Image (cartoon, rainbow, N blue to C red; front, side, top):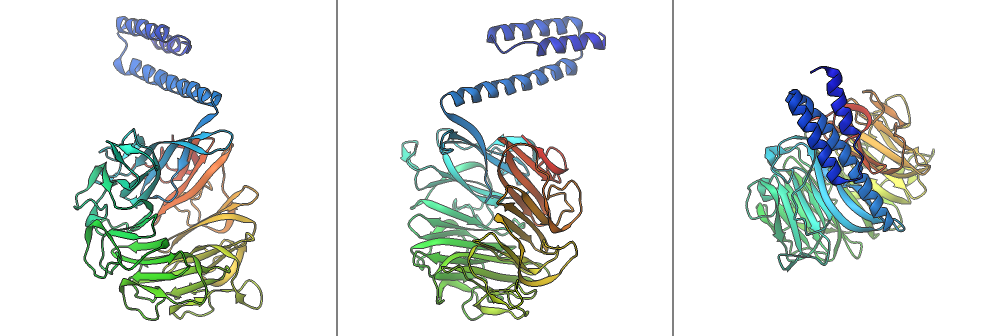
Length: 526
């Protein structure tokens, strides 16, 4: 059979209109019959049917979306920005009310890319070049997801039941279970999400950042202000007064009324900061450089209250192993001033020297000729050795300092080390990712632009090339409404993820099928 005849059959398939289901099926049957009579090669008509199915899928989705709009509802995709993904992408399908943009229903979670030991996709799959649904129970809505690398948790929406049980204090867990970090009572990897019953409802879960799957820690903050932990406990990270690992969630007897926790964990070493409802600061875990701010460098398995003159409203801590361990912490006081403790090899503590400090000291602003105490901070990011620290002020000034392995975004020439200075103004929000010495920073501007600088040899910044950038430059966004954007990096790998016009866009190198292809600009992935 000649090529022209084959094209006619394919064209005939695509000429079918979405008006009558039975007519469509009859048309397909007739065409298949003709194909069979003409003895067309199997791969030819299979390709034609695949293409047609994709067309039907697109039309059906369009019809479904239009029907939802008629009743004031829109289906959207949501980035899960706090999932620390390794060679992977993830989004959740949600339904929102058009008038208020309020979420009225939570849908499925989808992931693609890396799946270590077939355990992290929630569907017993290997690395996959397309999004697959995580196999959570269909009759339970999940309002949040936590975890990273290869271990994950799903939190049900309040007020639901599953198998006649209220799920408010339950989680679903799956993935790699090193050191018992999933809290399931064992150390077996869990390819399919399983139900985990806890005594209290979770409001936050923080997991280890380690790329080394041999060691992982998990901490859970309950809505009642209690802290539970499981997994690795080599430096007292679980806050239970010893250094014994636990494969179940264990409640810390030393903490109560906790409002926020911050865990940093890398290759078997972790440190933690916490603040309570009264604005008191607590710290525990590894303390090799004094980042716990308790006046010495002794590790703590029992949380210690850190005496500061001001109430603390935000915390951030970082520990990294790169040519030796390093750690430092930043906190924001109620008046917007910032304090730092720990490693200071590249002026990470915000002072003009390189002396470490095991107590919290004020960070200074060197933007003007005469340094002054940094004030009016609303967001902080700390770093480890060779890392860059950041503060966003309430007026939109972005201050960066420390080790500028890729500069600080304000110059085309490389500046290696610097004290805190304003690098960019008019910033609405920012994300600063320090992965050992690999730094990337994106800034969402008040005027709607998105800027970035830092490591770009993996095409991760969306500039269309592989050149590192020392100066903030505008990311090449596609046409359409930018709904959300984040940079997702793991050590020297990663890329920007974005939801634009209800589609998932990403850039960077495709590793373990994480992207459709390696690309230096944002491209659709769904």
